[in-house]
Amino acid sequence: MPARSLTQWGARDPGATLTTGQDLKKKDPERYQAIVRALKEGIGHDSLTRVFNTSREALKAIEVAEKVEATSQDQILQRLTRTRDLCVSKYHEALEAGEVKAQSLPVAVGIFTDKIVQISGQPSTVIEHRSISLTPDALHSLKSQCKPSEVIEAEVVESHES
Image 1 (tube, rainbow, N blue to C red):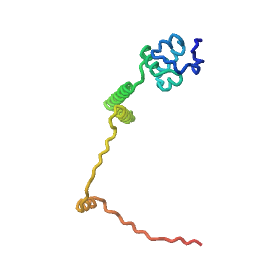
Image 2: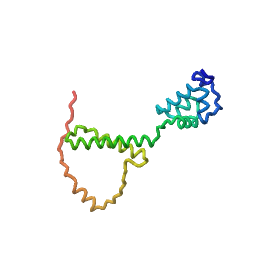
Image 3: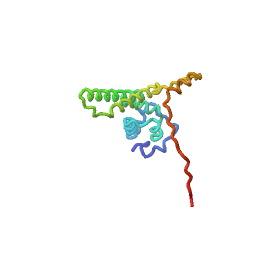
Image 4: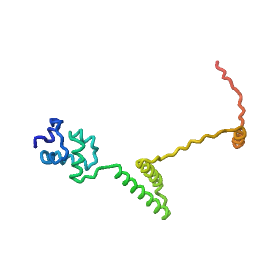
């Protein structure tokens, strides 16, 4: 194994910086390939910097060199949008065919739409605050719209403990 192999990560000089990743590829190809596999699996950069004792710059350089697609917020948003559109399409087909067995699809469409709105930075819920000044006439009008309450007669029963 090379001098800076998988077994010697902890012994690495913390001051050494690898900004291109090419030095790492030459000196420790096994470790380099492990980083590439981890990047392809979508493991976060914070975890990888701790596990592989490397810099964010090196991870970015390796992503570029190996053409690894990072799991970014835009990619997640695009995937959610495609999934939502597929759910809408399936629900529409089920409605047209008269087989509305896919009753969970509207819920899924709502969830995906809500998440898309949240990720894009828009509010998914709008709360409107209103202030109403009640005049005596408005209050009487509201009271007249209420159902009349039914009076329930009850009598007090005392318990007789012996």
